[in-house]
Image (cartoon, rainbow, N blue to C red; front, side):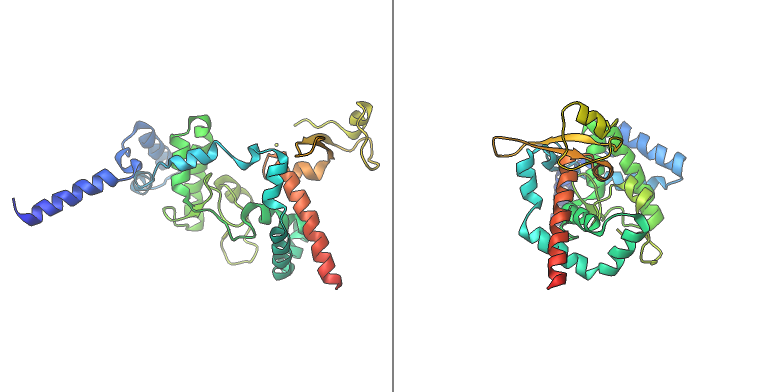
Length: 288
C-alpha cells in the first residue's frame, strides 16, 4: 500500500474518532423523526436540517450547567452576582449611551427605563456576555440528551430553525447561553419569535399563579411596610440571607410581570434591586 494511501486512511480514521457525537448519531430514530416533522410541518429542507443535526455536538458541560443554575443558590449568594458597583456603573453608562432608544421603549411599552436597563444588566451584563455555546449544540443536547426537559428544548429547536429562516440567521454559527438563549436580552427562540421587535427599522429583529390580594395577606397577619389597597394583587416572598433573620417582601403586580421574563423570584428581585441602584446612581450623576 502506498504511503499517501496510508496517510489518507489514517486521517480518515482520526476524523471519525474525533467526530462530534451528533455526526455518529445522525441516523438515530428521534433525529430522523424530528427531520421529518420539520420538513412536513414547516417545509424546511430535509438536507439542511439533517446536516445541522449531524453537525451538532452533544456537550456534557451544557447538561452540567442545566443541573446547577444560579437560581438554585440562596438569595444572599445570588444577589452578590449582580449587585456590584461595576454592574451599577455599567448600567448608568448603558442608559446614558442609549438614552433615546430606552426612553422610546419605556414610552411605547410602559416599562420603567431602569427596569429595561437592569434586565439587560442581569441577562448579559449590558451585552458583554451573550454566551459561548452554539445554539444548535445547546438545543440538540437538551432536546435529545436531557430527558427532564427534552420536550421543551425540542420545541425550542423547532422555533430556532424557523427563526433562522425568518431572520436569515446562521443556524450553525449562532451562539448563546447553555440553554440556547440569544443576544443582549437573552431570548430563547420562542420568545425571540414572539416578542423581539425591529425597533431600529433595519428590516430584521437582530437581537411564573394564583396571587392573593393584600387584604388576604393583611388578614393573615402580614403588615406591609407601606399602605396598599386591599384589592392590590400581591404575594409574600421570603429570601434567605446570610444573617439570622431572612428577608420578607410583599411583591406586587410589576414584580410578577418581571417573572414572566424569568420565572425565578430571585431573578425578579435582582432586577428590581439593580434597577433601583441604577436609577439612584443615574439621577445622582445627572444632578451633579
